Image 1 (spheres, rainbow, N blue to C red):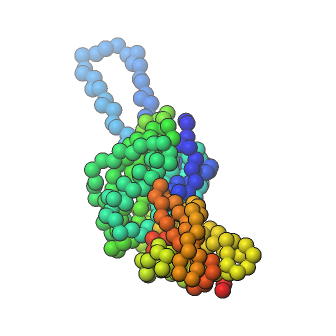
Image 2 (image 1 turned 120 degrees about the vertical axis):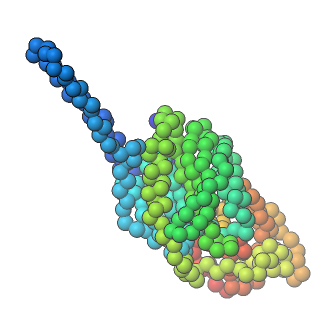
Image 3 (image 1 turned 135 degrees about the vertical axis):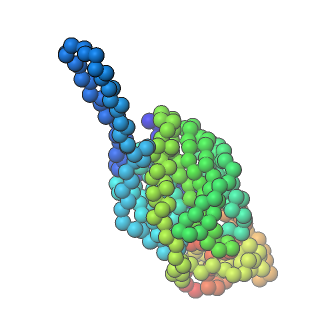
Length: 320
C-alpha cells in the first residue's frame, strides 16, 4: 500500500510513525462437509439437512487499548491502541499505525468560531499544505463522554493518495472544543476505513473522558486583546542595551510561542518602527496558513505573556 505521506504536527495534526498493527483478521467461512452415500436408493424420502449459519463478527477488528494517557492542559484522557505509535503533548494526541496509513488526532482547541467553521478552517489548512482536498457529508450528531457535538464523514485526497475518514468537534464551553480527525489511505484497499479504520477510531473515542484542564501557570495568556497586536501595547522583552541581546531575546520569546492548539509557528521580522521613545520590531507570525502581525520592544521589559489567540511551549524564561 502506498502510505499517506508521513507528516509532522501542523496545528494539531497527525504523526505517522511506525509500530505494529494489533488487528485480528476477520474469520473465514467454515468449510461445508460433503457426505457421499453408497447405499441403494429406497422409496423412503431422504431429508436434506439445511446448513446452519455460523455467526461471525462482522468486519470488527479486535482493538486492544493500552493504558490511559491524561492530557492535563487539554482536559481529557484517552487510551491508545496497544502497539500503535503515539505522540502526546499538553493539549493533543497523535496516533498512527505501522505504515502511517491510518492516522488519528485529538486536540483541545480554543476558538470563537462556530463548530463547522472550525472544522472547515482545519481541513482547508491541511488541504493547502498537502495539495489535497476534502469533501464532508452533512453534519450528524456525536456524543463523547456525555457531551454532544457534530461529526462529518470525509472523502478526498492527501498528498496524492485517496482517503476516507471522519472528523468531529465537541464544545466543552463557549470557546473551548475537542477536535478529532481520523483518516485512512484507501489507495489499495477501498474498505480500509470502513472495515478497520473507523473501528479503531470509535474504540479510542469511547475511551475519552473529560475533566477540567489544569493550569500550569507556565504560559500566562494575555487578557488584554491588544497585547502584542498594537504598538501601544507591544511585547516588551527587554535587554536591548546589550550587544545583540535584544534580537536573541526576541527569538527566544517567539520560539516559545505556539498557536491556539499548541502548533508550531513560523515568524519573520519585517522591519523596525520608531514609536514614541522606543523602537519596535515588527514580526509576521504564520500558522495554519494565516498571518498575524506582532510588535516587540527590545528596550523595555514587562512580565511576558502569550498574546490572545496564542499559547506557548513552556514558561517564558526571560528575566529583566
